[in-house]
Amino acid sequence: MELTALTSISAVDGRYRKQVQHLDEYFSEYSLMKYRVFVEVEYLLFLEKKKLFKLPGKAVKHLQKLAADFGPEDAQEIKQIEFTTNHDVKAVEYFLKNELEKCGGAEGKEWVHFGLTSQDINNTAIPLSWKHAIEYEYLPSLLNLNSQLKLLAKEWKDIPMLAHTHGQPASPTRLGKEIMVFVERIQSQIEQFIGIPFTGKFGGATGNFNAHHVSFPKNDWVKWGNEFVTALGLNRQQHTTQIEHYDNLAAHFDCMKRINNILVDFCRDIWSYVSMEYFRQKTKKGEVGSSAMPHKVNPIDFENAEGNLGMANAIFEFLAAKLPVSRLQRDLTDSTVLRNIGVPFAHTIIAIRSIEKGLGKLVINDAKLYEDLDNNWAVVAEAIQTILRREKFPNPYEALKALTRGNNKIDKKAIHQFIEELKVNDDLKRELKRITPHNYTGVSPKD
Image (cartoon, rainbow, N blue to C red; front, side):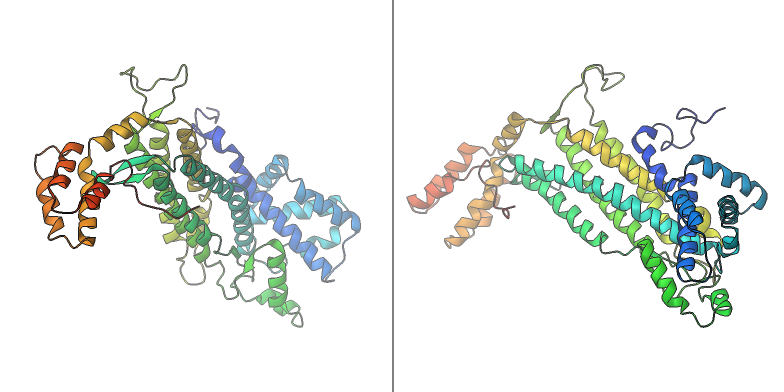
């Protein structure tokens, strides 16, 4: 059966393909070949600039164009070579040697992959593709979402809302401020995230430039290695085995996992507000909310996001735990694992899109917000007892506790009757009576 969105095993390449198909530029087998070719070409031209050999100008231009315009046909050619070599990086090397033959650069053939091991290519190509995916896809998506949340927080900043701690009515808050809680949390994690460097390994079979040094002992290969990796846009790890440490990559995964947990927390809060009818949801003609109950409009976008965030975090957690661990100077367990870093990335992007879609459907239900505040006058007891403390009134907490706990209905009339019976002056009584569930919402920093 032909592989299509309908026959794909993974939901990322099936049901959600349209949402994340552009990510194949960073995480597919094709993209891995593209980035490998780019690194190999850059390295070959780097050695040529260091005057270790000479390439005709025509060959230099051909290689530069090849790296810039690398396409599926080139990838297929490499795959055909791999059927013989049974080695993916060696297939890239032979592909480039063939290209040099075509463009009159045959004298440079043996400088392709000079002194390198496969991981010098993989551990620069993959971090580079990861860096580009983060910079061009993940951070813009996350920043856009956080900007959207900040705009909603501003729009809703003056809307009072009954808070719930332990699932019970608590001191009122404002809807905008509750959204700002998530804006602040996400922004804090973004700042931590961007402080994590993108690093690569480049130093030969066991990290010591053995083959390079024995061939050209007078060259400063450490300096050259640093220069080359920096030019790619990465930081070179100085003391490595055959592979990179993966510690910074694991730090990225861990930080993304924390951000995803914040988004899970957000989705669950919005889901709860919908269930409490603080939000209604816009309907779209033709859409079905429930297969059995026509009246329902389910908060499916936030549920979808929560599920995808959970999938992403399960894989991120495994990746962060597995990749930094390797036997002695290298085992092969990182190879197959690295090929899957695009999967949790894709699930994260799908989740962000679902949250954005869900936010676009939300409509404030002012009547329900007002009703809940008006039905919970007991929450102003905290305000009354705190002011009474200020006035040195004896045992105010105990007095309010006796009023508000139990089965008595605490409404505006009961609160005002309690205030009226207090042995305090009339000015203080008027101050206390001005407090309502609608205005007892505290203060927040100005944005």
